[in-house]
Length: 198
Image (tube, rainbow, N blue to C red; front, side):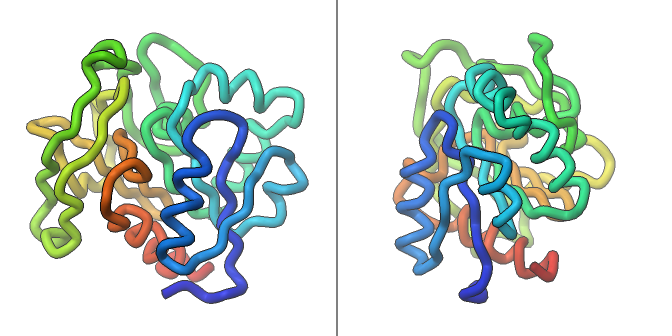
């Protein structure tokens, strides 16, 4: 699956980072927690988990992680972003919030309402990914992608809304794959790392 020497970092400032590590363990892939700039420099790929994007931004400041993450992405670091992680990656965020701007999408925060309106929904995959069908996905205060830019491919939808997107080196899911039963999203990310030659 993935070369043993690859180091996958999971941003561990806030959010569901341990659940993601559990999925990687189920796939036989090791991961490390990233809380500092030095830890970031040691990884070959990065996962930005769900949680509170505004809280993550505040926690990044003391370590200068925001700037360091952007530089690493610009230099080709593969990234998997889930839920709030996608907000951090988006080019434009509504209501306005600072973002890394690394993924050419516009996104609306908490678009489906409060946590009480969270749900488990069926996904519809694009034809080339039908064999990877993840079935149901967990949406918790999920963001909504309102614009998909050039060079960004939609892999799956929730109704008419894009919920799984790919651009070179980046896989972005507006839901919480770590809370579902499957491992397909993390497997797609491992393939993306290999595709990038990491």
